[in-house]
Amino acid sequence: MAISLDKLMGFTHKAVQVRTERMEVLAGNLANANTPGYKARDINFQDAMRSAQNSRNQNLTRTHENHIKGHMQGSGEVQFRINNQPDTGDGNNVDVQVERNAFLDNGLRYQASVEFLNGKIKGMKKAIGGGQN
Image (cartoon, rainbow, N blue to C red):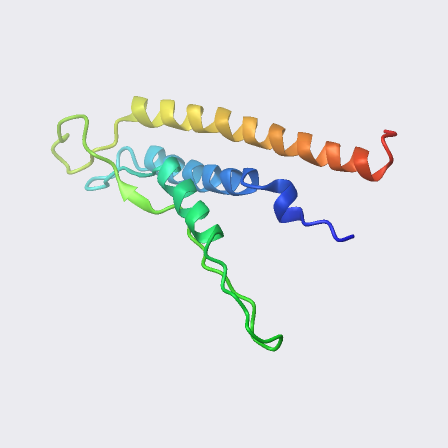
């Protein structure tokens, strides 16, 4: 009996991936807080997960065994953030406190997703080991 890791990990794996991408974008915003003309960017987590869910349901059907297996893959789309502070005069719209809070929030949610994934892996290891740990 084959074990599908995709089914085991489910959507949690994709959530960790999107959280990682978002962390990089937010870190970039913080790093460029003093760069003239820099515009803050972000990834909408809900949209990214919705896109991943849609692509997950759109696997291509093979009508012959020699056909290449394929699927559509969506990823989080980086978008510019809507200004919530007036322009500082140099074209930069990064609000450091907003970015810091978003970074911390995303980090906590990332950690929770990793813990959830670890729980699934531990459960699988326990099942493989016959319930003995």
